[in-house]
Amino acid sequence: MELTTVWFCLIAVLWIGYFVLEGFDFGVGMLLPVLARDDRERRVMINTIGPVWDGNEVWLLTAGGATFAAFPEWYATLFSGFYLPLFLILIALIVRGVAFEYRHQRPSATWAGWWDRAVIFGSYVPALLWGVAFANIVRGVPIDGDFEFTGTILTLLNPYGLLGGLVTLSLFVTHGALFIALKTDGEIRGRARALALKVGVVAAVLAVVFLVWTQVLTGSAATAVIFVLAALALVGGLGAAYVGREGLAFAGTFLAIGLAVAGLFVGLFPDVMPSTTDVANSLTTTNASATPYTLKLMTIVAAVFTPIVVGYQAWTYWIFRKRISIHHIPAAH
Image 1 (spheres, rainbow, N blue to C red):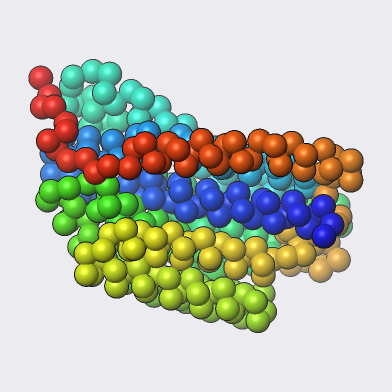
Image 2 (tube, rainbow, N blue to C red):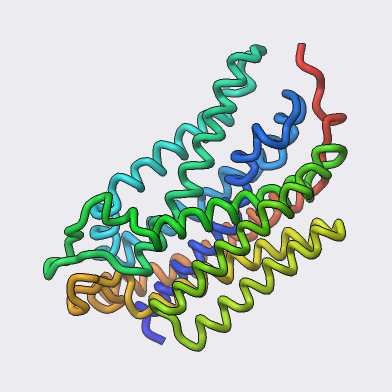
């Protein structure tokens, strides 16, 4: 297998890891004003992702860095053409990270309330815009002969792109609700499971429409199989939630999101950014890649450090695996 193909696959794995892990903590943030009835319940929700949210973002940083090093032309065209949505995502992630750190610094309800709003904002914006961005990458955007994006922000706000945003938004809400049900106890656990079932039905309908549309645009026999498996995983997850099996339910949405993203990358290959202007202008794993020496060096480094990072993050999840409830949260002074 050529190193360009290897790195396309590795970048796909990094994005899959980011969406399945960061997806549920985006969902927790978006559900903060919906599921929590008071400050102690909000603190319970935040504490479910407190030890892991920053580790989940490492997958995004690594995916961006790997794209820059392995496919510099792809990185340049993507970050210049999608500048505004990516800038908004960056601002939202910064605000969200600051909110997690500052929320508990003062014993003031007003202070905590403003930072809660920052968490909500910082969760909704990326959840929506990542879907818009990836849908447009799969669909293709106008690229000229110099591999430069020639559209505008309105180019990205097409029906397919907006549907992609709604799919990621609704899937992340469902994923987050099931994570809360898995990680908490008491009344909030029941509310989270009930909400996951309601939102999950909407997410399933939107996801099926989006995946069928994607199959028509760029699909193959392989993507059809992957998309069917993703749909079955989501339906199975919702069924498990209905009978109170939160672990299996969370695994279902985890697999559904992972398989859906994998299907998008399979349908995209060997392109990394198709051109709607002229197919000859499309960026591929060949014309967008770095030099063979760079890819070889990156492969050696990745082979050494990737298992270490994955092992450390798995250990973190194991250490903080137990449920929490309001009984673990001291009352505010």
